[in-house]
Image 1 (cartoon, rainbow, N blue to C red):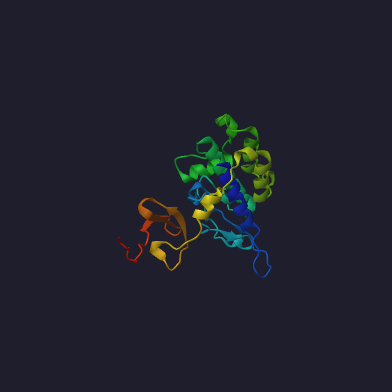
Image 2 (cartoon, helix red, strand yellow):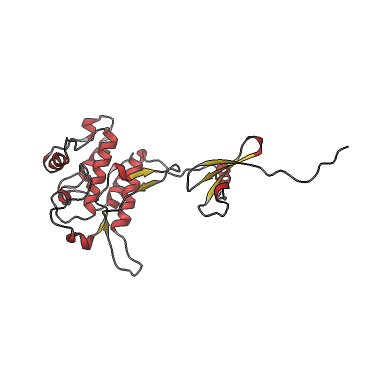
Length: 239
């Protein structure tokens, strides 16, 4: 859980500090960081999805008055009240996700979305190590600072959140490298699969199975197909 959030924090930092090819700063705020928009691939890589309502920081003021965009229960207080938001709003949402991942409970749970927004503004936020005693105290401190209601009391950036996790909770992180053994790396080198021999999607060869059948994993469809090894057409010489 901590490694997934650490990867998401680095992805958000990239968006918050994005620079156009022309050199112009163009920070982007996600505004919809929630569990539904975080996925982990079969190779162990974390993906932050759905930038559909993301806005550049210099255009956030153009959002229609009275319109609240985001997922109820994960929005920051300033996002709920319609105030201008920056990268610290995503830090709050990411902190909520981490709180729920380590405790197994919803932080702002209510029957309606309006009630959830009211909890975000006025509800009590319990420490995760009090809800679930197995949560380390350093991790609980990081989470509580991330979900502070005042933006000035939170981590100044997603990068700071990532650095805090790496410095205070290194034992909770894992290496996301999917393949470590040299032989496995060699077996998984890129190769066109049976379904896309033209190499459009880029696939990986997974070694040879029984009866000389070669296994192929397609990156595009994440499926494994078996292709029989081509037989020799040279006639065999009989005694």
